[in-house]
Image 1 (cartoon, rainbow, N blue to C red):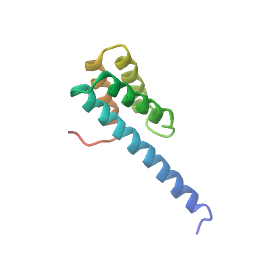
Image 2 (spheres, rainbow, N blue to C red):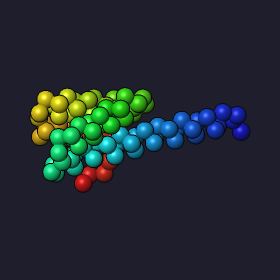
Image 3 (cartoon, rainbow, N blue to C red):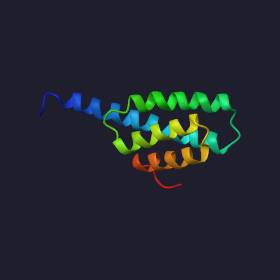
Image 4 (cartoon, one colour):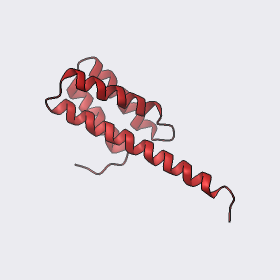
Length: 98
Protein backbone atom coordinates (compact mmCIF):
# COMPACT_ATOMS: atom_id res chain seq x y z
CA UNK A 1 0.00 0.00 0.00
CA UNK A 2 1.26 3.47 -0.85
CA UNK A 3 1.40 6.03 1.98
CA UNK A 4 0.36 9.01 -0.17
CA UNK A 5 -2.78 7.36 -1.53
CA UNK A 6 -5.03 9.82 0.33
CA UNK A 7 -3.21 12.79 -1.16
CA UNK A 8 -3.76 11.53 -4.69
CA UNK A 9 -7.43 10.96 -3.99
CA UNK A 10 -7.71 14.48 -2.62
CA UNK A 11 -6.12 15.95 -5.73
CA UNK A 12 -8.44 14.05 -8.04
CA UNK A 13 -11.44 15.19 -6.05
CA UNK A 14 -10.32 18.83 -6.08
CA UNK A 15 -9.70 18.72 -9.83
CA UNK A 16 -13.04 17.05 -10.44
CA UNK A 17 -14.81 19.65 -8.28
CA UNK A 18 -13.09 22.49 -10.14
CA UNK A 19 -14.07 20.96 -13.47
CA UNK A 20 -17.68 20.55 -12.36
CA UNK A 21 -17.78 24.16 -11.12
CA UNK A 22 -16.36 25.44 -14.40
CA UNK A 23 -18.80 23.33 -16.41
CA UNK A 24 -21.74 24.54 -14.31
CA UNK A 25 -20.73 28.19 -14.82
CA UNK A 26 -20.24 27.63 -18.57
CA UNK A 27 -23.75 26.19 -18.83
CA UNK A 28 -25.18 28.98 -16.67
CA UNK A 29 -23.66 31.64 -18.91
CA UNK A 30 -24.92 29.93 -22.07
CA UNK A 31 -28.42 29.89 -20.58
CA UNK A 32 -28.14 33.54 -19.53
CA UNK A 33 -26.95 34.66 -22.95
CA UNK A 34 -29.60 32.68 -24.79
CA UNK A 35 -32.37 33.66 -22.38
CA UNK A 36 -33.75 36.89 -21.05
CA UNK A 37 -31.04 37.59 -18.47
CA UNK A 38 -30.42 41.20 -17.61
CA UNK A 39 -26.94 42.63 -18.25
CA UNK A 40 -26.23 42.73 -14.51
CA UNK A 41 -27.08 39.02 -14.23
CA UNK A 42 -24.82 38.18 -17.17
CA UNK A 43 -22.03 40.23 -15.61
CA UNK A 44 -22.36 38.32 -12.33
CA UNK A 45 -22.13 34.98 -14.13
CA UNK A 46 -19.13 36.19 -16.16
CA UNK A 47 -17.36 37.17 -12.94
CA UNK A 48 -18.02 33.74 -11.38
CA UNK A 49 -16.88 32.02 -14.57
CA UNK A 50 -13.68 34.05 -14.59
CA UNK A 51 -12.97 33.03 -10.99
CA UNK A 52 -13.58 29.37 -11.84
CA UNK A 53 -11.23 29.63 -14.85
CA UNK A 54 -8.56 31.23 -12.66
CA UNK A 55 -8.64 28.10 -10.48
CA UNK A 56 -8.64 25.72 -13.44
CA UNK A 57 -5.13 24.33 -13.01
CA UNK A 58 -5.04 20.81 -14.36
CA UNK A 59 -8.08 21.29 -16.59
CA UNK A 60 -7.79 21.05 -20.38
CA UNK A 61 -5.92 24.13 -21.61
CA UNK A 62 -8.23 24.39 -24.63
CA UNK A 63 -11.26 24.61 -22.34
CA UNK A 64 -9.70 27.41 -20.29
CA UNK A 65 -8.70 29.23 -23.48
CA UNK A 66 -12.26 29.01 -24.83
CA UNK A 67 -13.70 30.22 -21.52
CA UNK A 68 -11.37 33.21 -21.48
CA UNK A 69 -12.26 33.95 -25.10
CA UNK A 70 -15.98 33.80 -24.24
CA UNK A 71 -15.49 36.18 -21.32
CA UNK A 72 -13.75 38.68 -23.60
CA UNK A 73 -16.47 38.34 -26.23
CA UNK A 74 -19.25 38.93 -23.67
CA UNK A 75 -17.48 42.01 -22.38
CA UNK A 76 -17.14 43.29 -25.96
CA UNK A 77 -20.87 42.82 -26.57
CA UNK A 78 -20.61 39.75 -28.81
CA UNK A 79 -22.92 37.22 -27.14
CA UNK A 80 -23.39 34.93 -30.16
CA UNK A 81 -19.66 34.41 -30.58
CA UNK A 82 -19.37 33.96 -26.81
CA UNK A 83 -21.96 31.16 -26.87
CA UNK A 84 -19.96 29.41 -29.59
CA UNK A 85 -16.77 29.62 -27.50
CA UNK A 86 -18.64 28.40 -24.41
CA UNK A 87 -19.99 25.40 -26.29
CA UNK A 88 -16.46 24.58 -27.42
CA UNK A 89 -15.26 24.84 -23.81
CA UNK A 90 -18.09 22.56 -22.73
CA UNK A 91 -16.97 19.96 -25.27
CA UNK A 92 -13.34 20.27 -24.15
CA UNK A 93 -14.47 19.60 -20.59
CA UNK A 94 -16.00 16.34 -21.78
CA UNK A 95 -19.64 17.26 -21.30
CA UNK A 96 -22.10 15.13 -23.28
CA UNK A 97 -23.69 16.72 -26.33
CA UNK A 98 -26.99 18.48 -25.63
